Image 1 (cartoon, protein in one colour):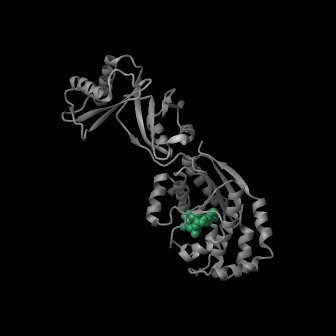
Image 2 (cartoon, rainbow, N blue to C red):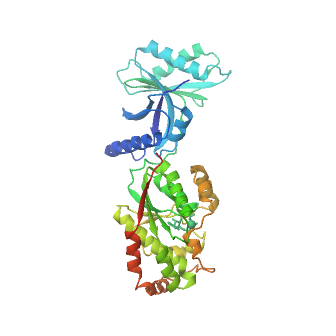
Image 3 (cartoon, rainbow, N blue to C red):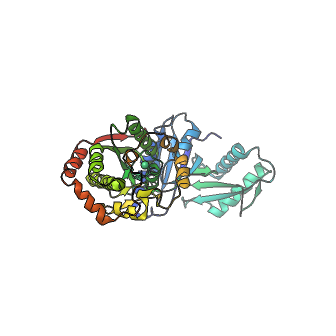
Length: 397
Ligand code: ATP
Ligand code: MG
């Protein structure tokens, strides 16, 4: 069977009522974005409370399905065939032809049922009658098939609308909500395994992502920066274009290194990253921050450390990896395609200035006190870092 159209199923939860069109428009936009990377031309459109993708030229079926699988909000991808409504006899012939093409060489014992839906209530038969009559026609044409209304191998969906749509395969989509329906958040994106996964997971709930990366040249290299850009590009396959803010963190790090106790370097540095990320977030209408932190993974991610880091933020901080084991995070990063890039062994600005024995139970009072050692220089250094930010728009197109 050569399909030229897909019917896109999306979760109904949260999309009822007057916001439904916003959800659908965002879905259409994200589908168009995903298909720009495919060979072929497509018309992505809404019709009668559905979203359809029609191929307007030759296209690669597998590649197209693969791209659609990356669009949040899609719960199912149904290769569909359709015809004009030209009477019931024509419809019988149409579904028999469909079954023959798709299941023509089946062996004895395969079971099926017809599942008709009629949104055109003027249609001369109701759904039950359509099920029975089309079932009969199919049985007559392909005797190897049997009917099983409870647990069939094949469900033939027949939707009677303006046109008549027939499909029997539902390829699972990623679920979630279309990006753009849930506001925007600022991802702290490092070159590691966890933060790209964290961005992916929040985007899956419909949140648009901007990102910030702190580098420390010459202690971190161009390659390390390029790795983060590459990771942002992979994440942007799912999220749409990402504004990546690149902040030069070297002077701030050197100041901390010089003026604060060794075992508190990481935690103080993390607090400055969060402060700067929050400033950027507020400048760009982001409603929250996202990190790849996971409880207990390293000294700066004990509950006590997270509490001290969190204390500098007024925006909510989303940490979708917080309760995951490393292996679970790795498995998601493999699934979304960031893993191979994340494990490239380039230096990270956190690891260069790291102490041998970092505090695991920092006291907020003591950390805040030691931060005062920076009073003379830090405002200027933060301002300079922000003034000199580099912004790259990273897109998968
Ligand atoms: P990841 O695998 O995401 O790098 P990690 O296990 O290496 O995480 P840390 O280095 O402690 O953990 O960083 C914790 C979180 O802080 C990261 O998930 C990321 O969100 C943020 N972060 C760390 N370093 C940077 C950086 N250089 N630029 C931007 N964000 C960073
Ligand atoms: Mg890291």
